[in-house]
Image (cartoon, rainbow, N blue to C red; front, side, top):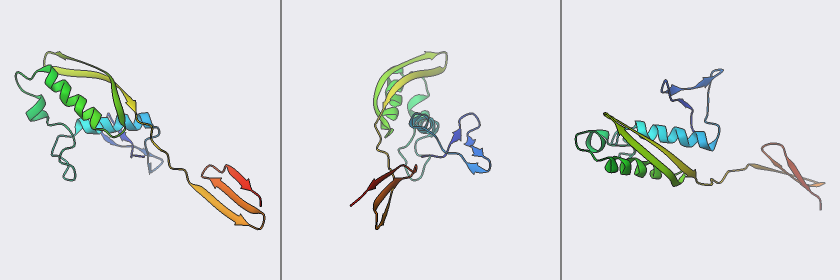
Length: 137
C-alpha cells in the first residue's frame, strides 16, 4: 500500500496522529496516476524518466493534440497497475487541455500471511484475519 496523499492540498493525510494509507486498488491507481501526471520528467533523481516533460513536449505553439494525447496515453500505460486503456477522449479549449480515460486494472496477487501452529492434537493453520483450518492426524 502507498501513503495517502490529499490531492487538493497535495499533502499527507493523518488519522489520529498516524499516517493514512490508500485503502483499495482503484484509489491506489488514481493516486499513482495523479503523482505521475504532477511529476516533471527528470525531477526524481532515482527515476529520471518518471513523469511528463511538459515544457518540451506538451506546452508550446503548434503542439498537435494527437501528440499530446500520445504522451498521456504512454504515461498511463507506463503505470504497472494498468492492464489496458479502455477509452480515452480529450479536448483543447482555449489554452487548456483536458482528457478523460478509463483503464482496466491488472489483477494483482495478494500476499496472505498464514500462521502455523503444531501441537500434539495436529496442525492449526490461521490467516491474518483469524480464520483457521485444523488438520488432525
